[in-house]
Length: 114
Length: 111
Image (tube, rainbow over all chains, first blue to last red; front, side, top):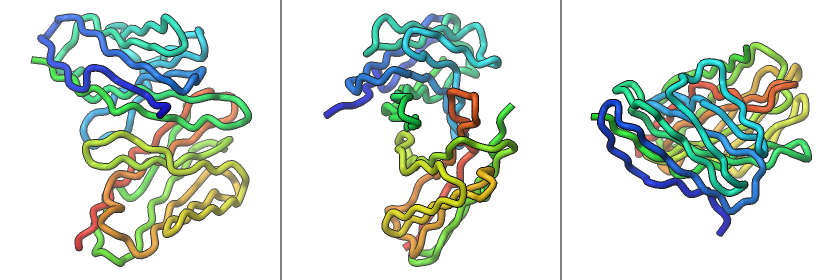
C-alpha cells in the first residue's frame, strides 16, 4: 500500500544533542511537509518542500533544518534540541496539481528531550 | 497572515446526540479541508470543499462551505463512540501554497 512512513516512531534525546527524524513516501507526491504538534494543539507547519524548492515558515526557529535528497525522502534535523522542542513531529505529503492538495500524514515521531 | 478560528474547542456528548464544529477564516479561502485525528493517532483527511455554498455528505457527516468561502461547518448526526477524536479544519488561501489549520474541536462521546 502506498503510504507515508516515519522513523523512528519514538525518539529520546538529550538537551542539546542533535537529532534527525526521517520520512519516506511511496505516493510519488511532489510536496512534503514537516509539522510540529504539541499536546492538544493544532499541527504547526515548520517548512515544506515543493519539489526541490525549500519553503521555511517565518516563525520556524533556526534550530530546525530539513533536507530532501530525493522525491521519496525528507529529513528533519534539530541541531540543539531544547525542552520546548518535545513534541510529535508529523510528516505529510501532497500532490499539488489539478486544484487539489489533500495532505497525507505519516504516523509521526514523538520526540522526548531529557 | 491567514487565521482560521475553530469552535468549540471541546465537546462532550452522549451517544446518539448530534455534534457540530464551526470554522471561520479571516480571509476568503480557495478551499477548506477537514481532518480527523484519533487519540494517539495522526490527522486523516476527510473531505475537501471548493465551491461557494458547497455541501457534501459522508454517511452521518455533513460538511458545508459558506457562500463567502470564509466559513465552514462539520455536522455529525447521531454520534457514535467511533466518532471520538479531534476534528480539524484547514484552509488554503489564494496565493498560498500551504494549509492553515484551525485549533481543532475535541469530541468525546459517552456510551
